[in-house]
Figure: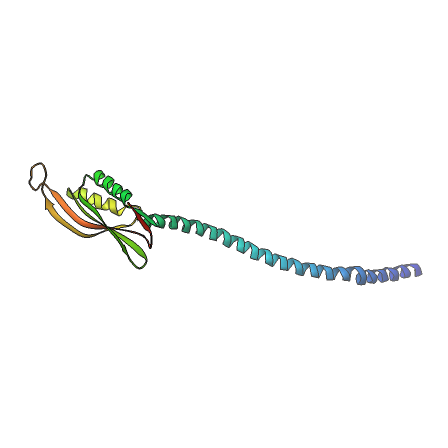
Length: 183
């Protein structure tokens, strides 16, 4: 019995010794590691949020870039008058509208852009003129029709009013402030 009491006391002493030397020391390490883990987890959470914002920002940048490229076509930095006149000629032919007068007037500087005015006179049927005006409206670059005057026209074959309409107007197109005009 004495031996079992001695063994029991020794086991208790060894247990206390291990607790104060190994377990207590490891408890401090465990607490330190848990604190470090929580800090790293918080950093990881912040990093994931940044990555998600970066993906969203990249998506938005792609959309804005596409809109910017479209806007550059609508308000170019250079204007080729000969190219614009060729486009007008094609669109008039497509709509069976005859261009009677077409004269580029020049460039006028505004506060944030430059404006190019072209005086035009065309003739054609009512629906043809409507189609031509709609075609002008659907151009990639911005164009505005101003000072539109409509009057009855005469057919060149019979010399009589034959549902022909004359349209006289100013066509305004725009380019970036300080842009250059060619041709």
